[in-house]
Length: 491
Ligand code: PLP
Image (tube, rainbow, N blue to C red; front, side):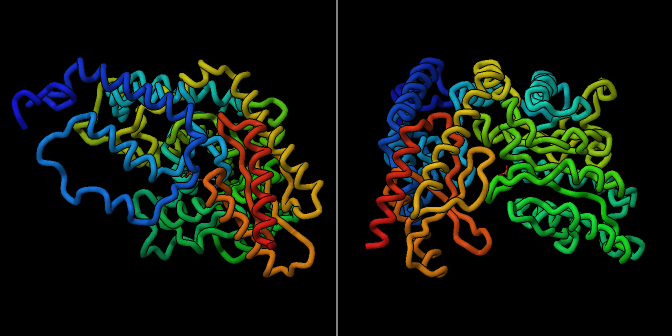
């Protein structure tokens, strides 16, 4: 690289970071770029229209020896990266649980990148530690959760739930932290209970904690995909008779396939009777509790031992931010705290240090973005957006219900609609293939993205509304697309 290029025109200086002039210039360019991205996002296909491996094929195999200019790097964002993106920020993204970032959240991420705090101990980031305590308590209040629950952030619900189950296991007083579980003849099989609709992250948590898949008993659900409390009671009693040690129940408010809501209120007394930990997975639906009229869905959670919710799902928070609310922070701490000499601080007895409550040492400054989001939109502003998503979902569901060619596959308590095409004269096997073809057909247009599940062995399409930019215009458009695709598939 020539001297002239170094440190100017977007090239790195010989030593140190980018010049302040270049930082301003490219920083402003990038914010403009992001503003244009949101303005024109509907011109882009929702699902990346590339073949597997095609991005890799366009990237150099080896890293550049010399720095390249920011202009060249940013040009490749347009040329290489954007075409390889599936646009979660697109207002016609309806797959999985539709989620979206928001402007104050993006600003929070930008600042968090600048601060680069590792909030492992209070002193390594007092701001992150204390802002997290306050912001998560704001969210608790907005959701109407019990004041006995204390919040701590992790990256994902998968990790939050694993930590909850680890704390529950600590509570069984079998010296598992000290002795482990393998090779022990004194330890009965520990069991966790969840419905067959529970998210696979619970299975993974169980596996990670060494409880084994045998350690998770899946319970049947009723016609509306909710855990059957009688089946739970019987399973616990049977396991106890057989010498097992039931210690935790995972209920779900807002299951992944259908957003069904387990009857937490009826599950609570069963857990209390057997002195078992109740963890409630509200990864998706917890955000809806900020809307006063949807709070009833959380009934019973006030007596839960832990509740997980994901602001990165439906609270317009850029990935990642999951919150575990826990009633027994002492047990969580007992399960994970380990302070080597090099991390000892004079104030440690007086303050909370995030690393005491989980597997990670360093922790991101996640609370900043949520704090900015809650302050910018306000509780009522957030509730209004979620309420509107639910209204749109109900409207879409009403079109499905009114049509002879489509049917609803599950109730629609919130913003997820499960449905399928049922044109006359098709047998069950044909219907599965037909619905799959409709979904792939719609997705291939690039104008919308749907995903699917299986309910009662029937392939079911899922339309999830959760994007801050989705309006009635896009929902009408996807309904038209689905009907056009049905005509194509039947032709
Ligand atoms: N729990 C439920 C009910 C979910 O729907 C999901 C994801 O969709 C998860 C847990 C896992 O979320 P995460 O990706 O944050 O681990």
